[in-house]
Amino acid sequence: MKRYDELAPSQRTIMTPGPVEVDPRVLRALSYPILGQFDPEFTAYMNDTMEMLRSLFRTTNHWAFPVDGTSRSGIEAVLTSLIEPGDKVLIPIYGRFGNLLYEIAERVGAEVAFIEREWGTVFDPEEVIRAIHREKPALVLMVHGETSTGRMQPLAEIGKVCRELGILFVVDAVATIGGVPVNTDEWFMDAVIGGTQKCLSVPSGMAPITYNDIAAAKINARKTIERGLRTGTDSVSSTSVSRPVIRSNYFDLAQLQDYWSPARLNHHTEMTSMLYALREGLRLVLEEGLEARFARHRVNESALVAGLEAMGLTLYGDPSSKLPVVTCVSIPEGIDGESVRSMLLNAFGIEIASSFGSLKGKIWRIGTMGYSCRKQNVLQLLGALEGVLIRHGAKLHTGAGLQAALDVYDQT
Ligand SMILES: Cc1ncc(COP(=O)(O)O)c(C=O)c1O
Image 1: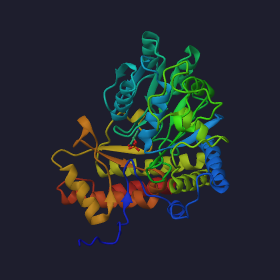
Image 2: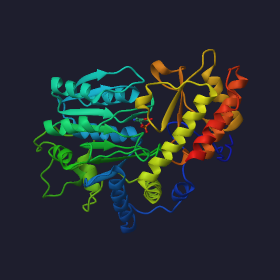
Image 3: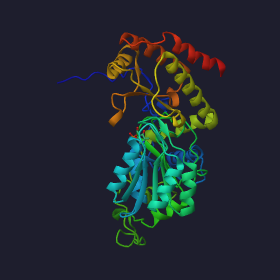
C-alpha cells in the first residue's frame, strides 16, 4: 500500500495578494472542538460574528454575515440574489476581477453594459457617472481594490449618484476589507463583498458580505422556502413569489437570511471551524482598531515602495490610484520573472505573485496584507529580492533598498 507522509507544510513568508499568513490565534481557533450548528454556544458565536462584521464594514446594516465558500461565492450569492434575469447592469472594468463581475452577471441573466479602462489605471468617477446616465442600469457593479493590477477605485461619488437615481451599487471589496477603509454607509454601497484570506488574515473559505434594506427588499421579493422545510402555514413556494425565483439554492440570500436570523431555518451546515477562525480574525482586527490597522498597512507599503524604488526597480501603474495593500513591480528587461519567484521561494521561503492575462510575465505583485504586513517581512523580502536579482544578472543600486525602507521605519 502506498504510504503518505505526515502533513508538514513549510513555514513561508507570504507576500502575495492572498492567501497570506494567518495569526497564530486564528490557527488555534481552527483547532477548537466542533459544536453543533444549533447549539446556543455556536449560534452566539454566529451573532458575535455578525456584530463584528458590521463594525468592519462600517455599516448599520442588519445583514452582515459570511457566505461559506471563497470570496467568489460571496460575489455569486450577491449577484444571483440581486440580479433578476433581464436586469440591466453596468460594470466599469479596470482589471481581471471586474471581468469576473461581468462573467457572473452574464451567467445569472443580466443584460450587461460595460466600460473599460486600460489596466494600471482606474476610472475618474465622472466617467462612470456619465455611463450611468447613458445606460440607466438597475445595478452598478464595481471592484474597490483590483489585485490583478494593484489599483484602487474611488467609490463615494459613484455611490451617491446611484443612491439618488435608485440604482443598486454593489462592490467587491475582497482585497481591501480590513486593510484600507471600506465605508459601506458613507459611500452609499448597497451590497459589499469582502474576503477572508487577504487583509483579514483568515484562511480562504468564507466570504463576509453585507447589504442594506434596499437590497434586502429586492431579495425578499424573490424569497422561497425550500420544499423539504415548508410547513403547512408557509405559502412561499417557487410558484407563488411575485418575482423570478433566485436560481441558485446554495447562494440564495433569502434562505441564508433565515439561517442567520433567530428562525435558524436550516440551509447548509455551517462551516464550524471557519466560523471560529473568522470570529477570531475579526476580534484581532477590532482589538488593533481599524484606523491603527489601516495606518500599519500604509507604513509597510511606504517602506516597501521606498525600498523597491531605491533598489532601482520601477513600479507598475498610475501611482495616484495605487492600491495600498498590493505593490506591482515591472519585471526588468531580460529577467525571467518566474525564475526569480522560484528562487525567492526555494532559497528564502518567500512567496510573491505573478499576474494574469495581458500582465502575465510583465509584473510581480507583492502583497502587504493582514498578518503578513509586518516590518520584518518587508525587510526580509527587500534583502532577498536584491540578492536574487543580482544572481539573475540585474543591475541594481546595491544596498540602497533596505536602507531606504529602514529610513521610512525610522521616520515613523
Ligand atoms: C478583488 C478580488 N475579487 C475576487 C477574488 C476572488 O476570490 P476567491 O479566490 O477567494 O474566490 C479575488 C481573489 O484574488 C480578488 O482579488
